[in-house]
Amino acid sequence: MTAQIRDFAIADYGLAIAMWQSEASVGLSSADSQDAVARFLARNPGLSKVVVVDGQLAGTLLCGHDARRGYLYHLYVAPQFRRRGLGSKLVDACLQALGKEGILKCHLFIFRKNESGKLFWKSAEWIRRADIEVFSRDVK
Image (cartoon, rainbow, N blue to C red; front, side, top):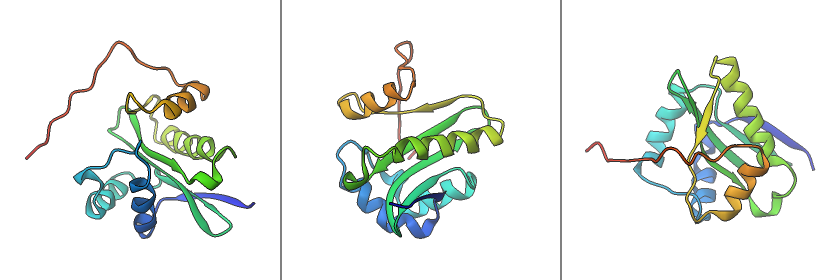
């Protein structure tokens, strides 16, 4: 198995959205349209990553920042490629890219019912924050 981590390109969108749609733990909204993802990638060049295994897109991770904190979205590794460290490699690549931008802290959002996701992040030494809650609202 030859795995390569590279920047997420908008040309990856079609396969990426199909992957995300196949996973109940990935929450999708209008912010995940091709135009919205293209804007996100343009605003955060070189931060989002994909992993390609033997020429096949095997995983994704969107990464960006607000000049103060980094944020990770849609970590996904295809089922046939899981348990090989690819998710961790994607996370490490994104954190390294954030560090080069001078970003010292990163956050992510996860659904409360996503038990496997919580186990992954905990095993990767991420700390669950019990002191904050998220509020959201559509702009329009």
